[in-house]
Length: 577
Image (cartoon, rainbow, N blue to C red):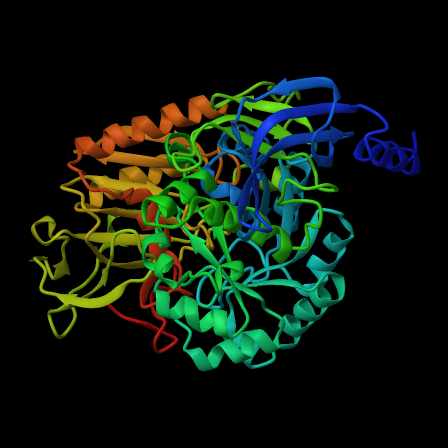
């Protein structure tokens, strides 16, 4: 049957001349256009909503007053941060009501380049989750570190032929935009010619710099950490994404910026969220619960979680329970508690009571070579981890703030042995190392980090935004070295060491970022790592691996560590310990 026949049948259903394929009876429908709740039937034909009102269907389901809410949309997410591949990721977020995501595969792009991007596109085909892609704009993120790949405008342009590619992802290299770098201008121009969708990354930018971004066509930002920053971007015409992920939890700080006059310019996003938090707390549904707990009207929270993102990205048939829209919806009993009963995708129930109704039946035939065996480092010795005392006798330290990506630059007096600075657990200061792991260059950046919350031992992993080099932290060089060697031997993992023994690990065999194992096995692995962290004394409210992974990101103020050493974003230069 052709599209015209489908259209005729849908109109016949809408007019009442024919019965619908499916009618959801007696639903309390959340109208995200008028911010009302309406008691009515919803008719679905060929996976599309044909009408709301009173209808008869070939199949009728009486939901007896349950709330019917549009499928939720995550406006910006890095699937890789969940540590599972896209088709596994859908199994995690769909039961939480997320039916559409906008993803930026720049994590795997920094490791495996174009082949990594293609892997993410291919793996997200034919799953019960609509996955739209924004192309990585800055690989590497800056010239101040070494990544595994470099993507030029020419490398990105062929991807625009794919129907699920929307535009250009978070443009974090502000200097290249401001200085009109030729390759950056081509990337911006290509995205503008395609759909005009360009995401921003305005971390720490003064208000005056927002003019440059907006003039370049950038229309979103997910890096606001204060209400004042959010309002400045709203005034400049940006959509502001309220982020609540594993490391950055900005919702409480940003919610005061939302009011009845500007709410349509806000969206929700997770950005980076680990699988354990996704399973236990949820995805965008968690945003809704948190927002309602802090006083936001539940219907408005649903609007922000659905319609706003749909309109921002041009999803003209998503984000609402209305005729002509895809039949992506959620059923639940209490709008404020937002505990999901069932999730429907294209008119088919796909999840119930937190569980998928169907699994992915594809047989794994292997992974592209570019995403395998991605840890390439030369032999590292304890001597390579030594940090000699400087003339001042005071060491520069990254001061971590829990649940924030922004750090401070501090100085500390540390113990000294044989002319070398040592970690000091009594001050919660740990030695940190970033080892280039893509081309075995031998680059090792060394420094110190405060407030990681450990009591001893060492941790290491290959998740280290955005270049994803190997990062390690600990109080003893021998334990750090063992953790580093474990990561190398596994071809990418998270490793925890105590007193010369590996006590916990999670294999990340896809680009050193994701596991090929099923969701539950990865979750079990995360719990093993958590138990190991507790064994080395961690009792904090944030995840040390997640926090550490962002201490390597030089595009976020103020002090970070790359494979080339400390980087001070305020001066735009590398600096010594």
